[in-house]
Length: 312
Image (tube, rainbow, N blue to C red; front, side, top):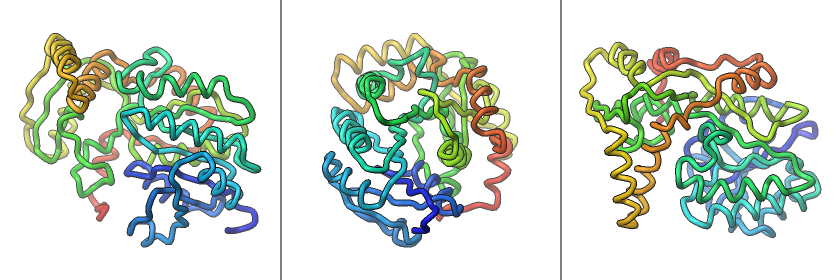
């Protein structure tokens, strides 16, 4: 590690986190360390420094101090109580460390200020941790929000993000769509590479706000379908799921206790409520304050850029 480089530690790196790894590796200002339960070939191929952890506070603290970390960014995603336990361990380790001054917990969702309990799984996991964060002292943090990941419009060979055809309304792999509500509900999308660039740019900012918003494009799914059809050169078979159906599914799955199906119903509720739309005025303020040098891609730009890119 260069003596002038700040060490950034990433935790729970899955798919979105890979883009942040690549962005950090591409610059000379930062040194990257990943903490994980196990190493993987993807890390080895890029010679990424991986430190093994069991995600207890003592384990995380020992790593932060050993590498002289200046910031910890979490991509640890869980739908149960382990989310709160692991993030409390991360927060406590940051506050106890000798050098770690900043923390970005795993969020990456939408408008949490107007819709703090949407989707329901975030109300169960993230909302309690947000309250703990607000009471913390001695650590700077921000809740990073980006709306939908725009990469779900790409085929599986063009992105690290695995397909989620039951969750994201437009399925470019199975070539079908199921539009929730009227299709006119407001949404936000941001490409994964732009999210990574924004996170790295944010690391250089002198001060953070409690919530940070980014967005590549605002619109509705009805507006996006013609763009997708034009790019791929064929009509997209489309079905619809009404708000009434979504509410019925939500009640039925709550009664059945099927966690996976319930989460899908909660995401449907989230998008038709408009909670996936990052607030425009505040997002543009953040763009001017934190990201004046970044260009956030629209869907057309992302699709065009994907023509010459394969991830694997």
